[in-house]
Length: 210
Ligand SMILES: [Zn+2]
Ligand SMILES: [Zn+2]
Image (cartoon, rainbow, N blue to C red; front, side, top):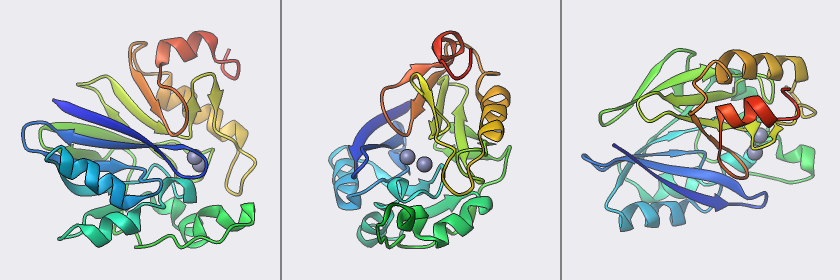
């Protein structure tokens, strides 16, 4: 079984998902937005051990907490990102575009590939490449739990913005059609911002998709 704790962190209130395999206590952090120390405190309170950091994409508001986690945990967790987002990571996660300066912290050490299977205890997650919001955006699908961690690809009633460097509207819509809307209606969508929703709900009511 998978346990999920959602923490809303950082200046644009990004959803950080601290997830764990209940049996082994092995935990991963999806998009540690900010305040890495707080994320580690929460994991310790729950008796979980963070061994992996999975980044849906390299925007600064999704990875500001990596440095705090890495400084607190030994051995440090692996950090994974799709290689198509490495240039964005090196550009401080796009922060200069907002007039901000940002230290992206420790560099990712693992490269995601489309179709790759990730393991967390007995739980499995399929990596799906979903470009459009950024070039190297990925989502994580856990079929057994009917959950998609979908970053900034799709939101409750919205889609990711495509006006930032690397963004492309048609590419994003194509990613949503092929990698999200092909999943069963009851699949929970846990997004990078805002409330959770379901594939069926967005298929029916999302104004960008109907
Ligand atoms: Zn983003
Ligand atoms: Zn975001």
